[in-house]
Image (cartoon, rainbow, N blue to C red; front, side, top):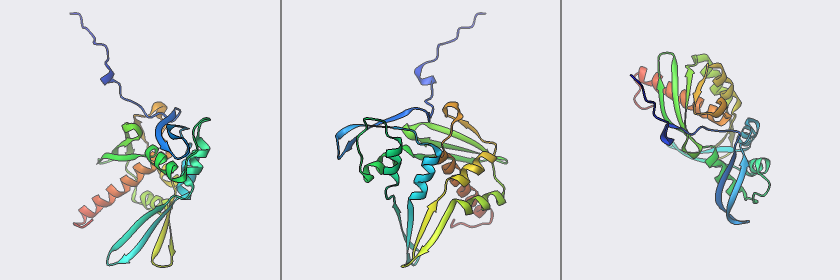
Amino acid sequence: METTLEAPTAADYKPQFDTTAEIVRVMRTASAGKTEVIVRWPSDELWSKRSMERKHLTKVLGRGQQIPEVEEGDSDLNLYNATRVDGSPDLTAAEATMFFNQLARASVRSLDLGSDDAVVKLSVMNGIEVTHTLRIPSAQQAKDTAKAMDRFVGHPHSTFVNTLKLEPAAHLWAQLSPRVEGYLHNSVPIIHKDAVIRELFMALEREAAEGAGETDF
């Protein structure tokens, strides 16, 4: 009996995240009105530099109340000037922040903790869905990495400043026998590795709290 194979349709092809392609966005700018903005995908080193230049402030008001705030400074403008393609318009610092917040998108769609592995699905730039499957880290690995990822400094008036380091999460990610889907050439940017590890840590903390009978975690 002869078998007929149907040709794949457009619905059968899933878009892949490509760190080698130029990114084109149409946005309204102060310098050129509504126009195309084109950049190269930033290297891991540039993403890390941006993260270190941003300050995450938390002002403690008392009675459990806090006000979080992010001071971007010129971090996004510096990143834009390092990756912009010739002909792209000048951007203000606020415009650059709006632009790179879209590029850095990594929203968790689901996270499943198995007996040995965790499966994390992200929705990233352009709505592309990617999957990370990792070995679950040991308690010591999680403790050491979490300590290295965030640097808190106390300031006057009950204000704390946190600087986020991306490299510790990326280092742990590489140690956990990662398998990925949705990335062209399996090239995973450091900001996605960091997002996966941070979400994994929170899931493990929730699991531990539930196991201890805590209900307010």
